[in-house]
Length: 82
Image (cartoon, rainbow, N blue to C red; front, side, top):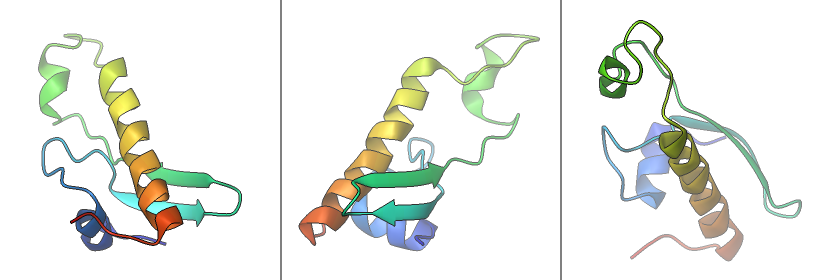
């Protein structure tokens, strides 16, 4: 539904803090969005969180959800950020 190029039109975040890679479902009437972040072992945060047991930090998971919610909000308003 939205690829990385369209996502970049709506979010000011850029690598490494852009945490939405694609949107596969966006329903403004149901107020629902489903988005993905492609996570690989090469992500910088895995070096210290946690060695030998890499886990994506919870704060980054929450940030990814906030970015997806931002995409939904802009689509619901029918606007792009200035």
